[in-house]
Image (cartoon, rainbow, N blue to C red; front, top):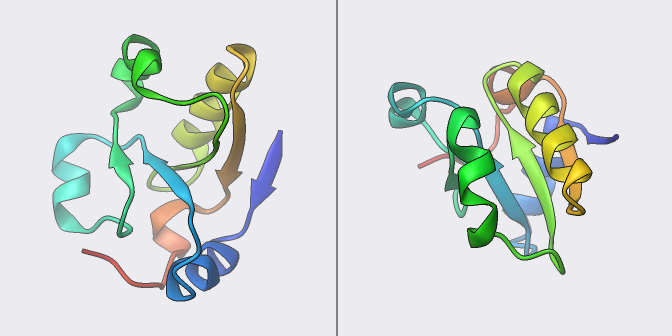
Length: 98
């Protein structure tokens, strides 16, 4: 599984690079802060929302600490998606949020 550091994601967000982020945290967690442009799909619903994703795009999965996003990345990889897991999660992300 490919991985990306929170600092690298911060740089991509600040440069307004076209990135596709999937935040797999629960609703109450996302209410506190979310990376701009990230789409919210809780891990438990991800398998049921695959039709909403585009296999031609590369996605970065994000959660609180990196565990759930790792599971999400594996699930997506097994379904033929291009995906990168952000290690350390939102606990280590210091970039812009909304």
